[in-house]
Image 1 (spheres, helix red, strand yellow):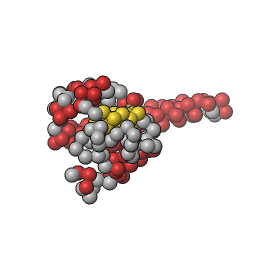
Image 2: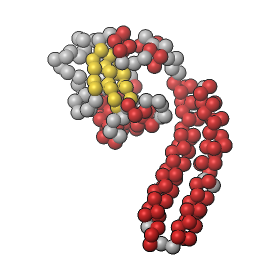
Image 3: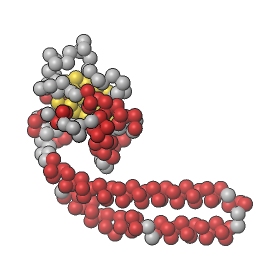
Image 4: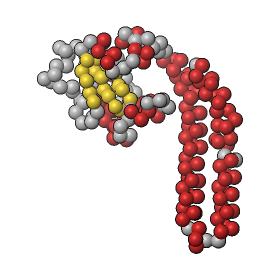
Length: 200
């Protein structure tokens, strides 16, 4: 079992969860829905430790935890071991069909009665292409926010500073933004990169 592997620590799992949370998606503000398949064995305590750790680093990154398990494995009287303190909506589902109330079948694998054709190798290849692009956009966004903040702070001091100096500083910041390699690349190649990622 992967739960017993040397790499499977709470810290490593939390890092993986936070990485998944950072991936761009339409409903990013809602947090992740985590489906735990515990039909054959109870969920490992390290999983819930990782979820709590991820929530503490990025509050709201986990929206819902769905525990798919037989009633005999986890009964309502016993509660859901390890879930206490997560601060998220948690549901025990005794049947696979119940997942449909929470997750669209297009987002579930065939093992969970879904239609999502997940292949880990293909996902890794896709992520290796996606991550540099999103990281580049993140750095460009940080530069823009920094320049905007500096412009605002300069404007508030404009009454006591030389106007010509303020105008020159504005020009310098604008030139810095326009010549930034991350932004230049996003402007020139961003559309093509997105088109390739959509096809894949």
